[in-house]
Image (cartoon, rainbow, N blue to C red):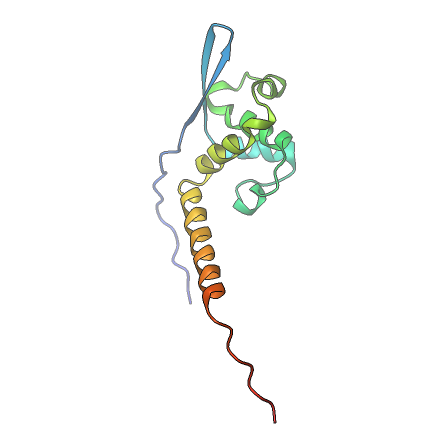
Length: 138
C-alpha cells in the first residue's frame, strides 16, 4: 500500500489557556500555548518528548511546572522557571495537569472519560453476570 504524499496541510488554531496570578491586590493574566517551540523548550529541560501523549503520564509537580513555563514561551518568554514555580503548589496539580494536557491534545480529557466509563460499564456487566457452572471433565 502506498501512502499518498501530503501536498498541503492547514495549520489548526492552537488552544490558548490562561492563568491568572494574584499578588496582593495586583492581578496578572498569562497566556500559555503548547506549540512545537514550547514542546522543544520543555523537552530540552525535561528530557521527555511531550509531543507523544504517553510521555505525559507520570509527570511530577516539578515536571508540570516546567511544562507551564515552556507554554509561556510564545507570549511571555521573559518569565523564568523560578517565578512560575512560585505561582503553583501541590493542591493545584490536578487542575493544572488537566488544563495543560487538554491544551496539548484538545478533546483528550473527554476521550479518557468516555473510555473510563466504558471500562467501568464492562466491568460492572462482568460482575453482575452469574458464574457459569464448570463443565465436568470426563
